[in-house]
Image (cartoon, rainbow, N blue to C red; front, side, top):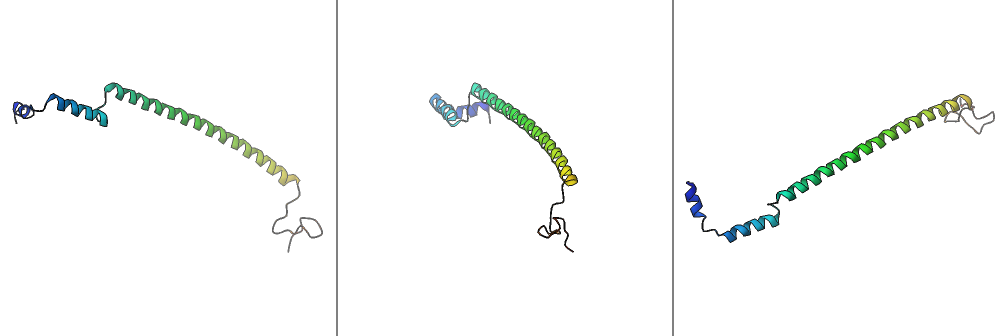
Length: 108
């Protein structure tokens, strides 16, 4: 197909039809001005940067909580060792606390 033949078949399409087509494309969002496109891309980039900042802040909080939990666990271990070494044994399913002779009487 020759270019001139192609153009001559569509030459009867008027200027108004082209304008209507462009307006319809703009209204439906298929044709966007370059400034609008760039503005939206910049917004998306800034939103991505916000998410990165929020993630790094969240990670800092998580690491801080992990360190605090480790310190608390060390304190609990010290307290547990103290109670096991210096306090009398706690009754369990093998001891009967209501029998005479103390709380550490074992069931035979």
